[in-house]
Image (tube, rainbow, N blue to C red):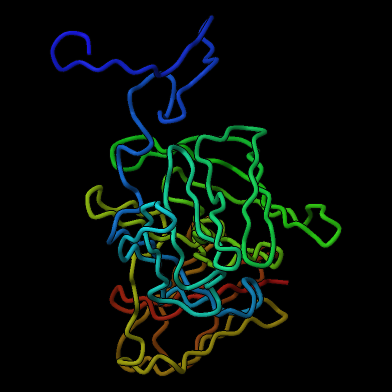
Length: 323
């Protein structure tokens, strides 16, 4: 104590504008923000991810009308540590890459989770890691090594959150690390592809076609509010296709570059849009008869997305490959 109600705590030491030591409880050298000031895993926090069909990200249509979700459903004490219970409350095999219920806690800049096989806690995220740093994640059947390639930041909740651009490597039988996959990690929110990326050898699990196959649509916190990934759909968007008899919609692209749209549109006029992988609309037209043809022969070869909507309701969205 130094005077009335003042408590002094050592944060950092620096020289020549370079931070040489930082108290690990603090976010950075130049502020009094602590990692544990805000509980980003608090009960009722929820993550929403776009859903794929489970048979390959590029090979089959994605079902962006649906979603998967993890929710913090409560607290428990494990080995004397207060943990949050993260529960997969909605999803299927196309997105579930780890156990449906996982116990986690955050200490300073690091999130730990309980390995259900070993019954030991392992590092999942190290938000304080910078370029060149790495850590190991011990999943049930394999170890993954995460290496930080670079960092930046994004605005969220009225502050800047650190973004780590990382490479995931999977440990093989000869104890080496291979199968490097690129991804990102958002400070205190996790990997946008999925919170527990335990299946990196077979590529990432979730999908959202607007933003480089990042699965996260929204992170919703009971106190902080919602972080919505720009360009993605609403958090829990589910189109009511069955009410409009649009399940029979058929779209195909022939070898001449002609897109053929078939379906019973009734008296309503629907909108067809073609997008590139950056989410930019490159073609927009109306479809309102049983068969429509759109000439795409003048577009470059590659991967595109078409989506069909009626009165603002998304009916269908699928990736297509123009040869």
